[in-house]
Image (cartoon, rainbow, N blue to C red):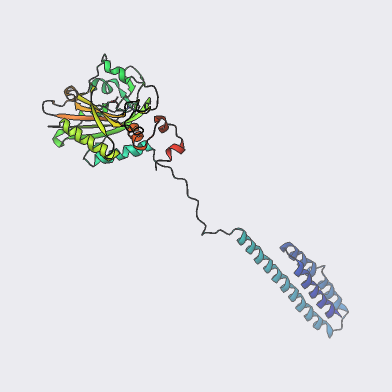
Length: 344
Ligand code: FA5
């Protein structure tokens, strides 16, 4: 009788376990079935009434059943734990074969690209790249460039003054004086370019800005002549624009060069017929140049009877505009990505 009861308990445990789906309920069932107040303990208590002969047999059987129930509970527990881990693995699954998210890459500003391209051309010709100061003294920006205080040509390069003597440079030309006074000619000729930002009190329009970029160039040695300047500029323009664009050299005036020229390139928009971009002239001025004025050489401690040189100042924005057909200079400074991202 007791045996049948024990077997019924085991079957009941089996059925209940099959319906259980969480670990808490498994533990509750263990307490319910095997605890002190559980049915097994109850059955064992009933053994008092059995004969001496039957008691050990029923006792042994009860132990077997208890072990079986314990085992059933353990098995269910393990199965549930395994299922939980499996579910976690599935939920946390990462597909390592999915393509990654590429970070958005920026590009160098078009003016930086132009500057580097011009630097490369001149580095290839043995020039060194020199940095100047954007905040300059009146002395280097004007006086040492042969523009004394009362010189009328100062009007063309009015600028932002910090004090009467300190200003935002109007051109990269002061770097000429700064490098000439430092150069040791016993080590060879002076050949440098210097890119950088410059400032003027110019009214902004399609081709002018109050803040823009130039690249200065300077060569000083014995026997430097105008033909060296022409050859160098022709090579630069050919490399930057290709052979189809026409160029012209116009006599001009700069206080720091004698003779002076201005170099124009045929307009990218109208091809030379005349339009609003080239102010109906067919040409866009891109640089000023000339033979370094003997007084400029002398002021930097160079003997002008022995040495001569040429210099040029290129407008970087103008180069970029001609190259890419940009018809408004303000595009360079507005930080509109739709504009800037075109130049990769
Ligand atoms: C000068 O600034 C001289 N220092 C250049 C020079 C150097 C001549 C060495 C001789 C020897 P200019 O003012 O013309 O010259 O300016 C040079 C170039 O800068 C111009 O050809 C033009 O391309 C550019 N530029 C001038 N003003 C502006 C402006 N407001 N906005 C954009 N580009 C400008």
